[in-house]
Length: 265
Length: 253
Image 1: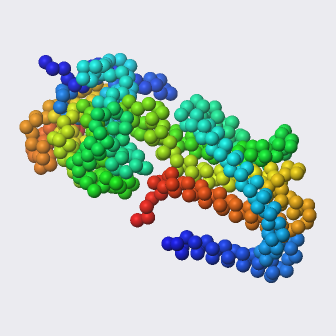
Image 2: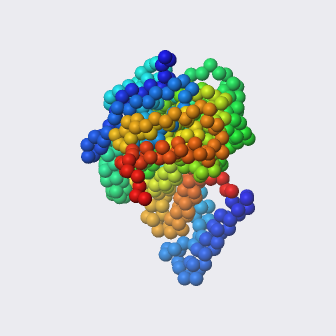
Image 3: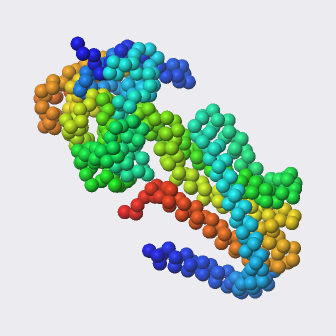
């Protein structure tokens, strides 16, 4: 069997706080095959963001191993792209120059012209055609997040890590961006890890949903979302989606420590 | 647009001068109580070469003091911005140092390096003005959202690259805000030393000689000349800010 592109094996991590160590991850296992898209959901503060930093190599786990493409992750890799809830665009740069930022750091064989063409193409793909020369402050929140996605993908990373990228957007903008994500995935194949609080988002975008338990987190439940599930917004309101959402919601309740007991009738 | 930018300040200044003149005239103050604007041209005409020479002295020493303040203040700010330990170590020292009224430091410095007038003046201009620069840079760097670092670090960027590409440009608006304060402070520092030093030079010394000779219109003329120089320096900073940190200004919509 082919080795998964992202392989997280028995990862544990604790932070030092004033009241002693705070264990956030405890023996977490997640693996994502090449081209897969895993959504990680779980209660607040259960270590989801820590997970992204571990995969990106920004931190090393206390115990366990993170493998990427058959190599153990010990430091940041240029084969990773990241986007956060905060789009963190550089205000003094145009949108185009923001998107091209990673190419200034990651070694690339592309000529200056090819780099620009790639940036233009990605921006057009997310619907930001004509905004290339604008400053981030001239764009709406949703548009900034689109630009941030382009920046995460410009250097053709193998792995895209998304840490609640749509968390601060309104519901309609969010649904738009889900569709943009699918358009991007079709054009720019990547392996994705999506951290989210939104169960509908996880089902719509991912082909596997991992529910983390409360702190310290381990993988509590894994749901496969069939690839043949039609990925259209209408499907979000179909009965089988409701069924999946219900299962996930129960799991979240368990993770929050509200137990398996049904709420009082 | 031009009308608003040029005409409005000019009108405001004229109104100010007229009111000043009227105030002196209405109270019938002699010029040793309060000189009026109409006394000033005479002073400027009589001492114009002194104003040019002394004005230049004050200007260059202020600018040199300020440049040193920028270099030292930015260095201290960077050290404090990047290292939490250094921030905790240096903050009380800096705050305490800044709390000392600089008028008390001036005579000490004047005695310490007696005779070295240029050096003393620049030293005071520097001492008085580096604090806001150090604080603004340290705050700018230490409040950089971790995501900004992470975006570049996750690509394997070095600390130096992160500093040049993100931390430094992101701190520029705060830096220029502090520089506007610092430029005025440096100017005060220069003049304090010029006034206190025996045989000093610069506009401060000219002010002092006006005092010794009971030439009150000259003293007021120096004040106005100082105000003009201060305005020039301030707007130089504003122009630099527009060039280097213009992006931080919201476009009027």
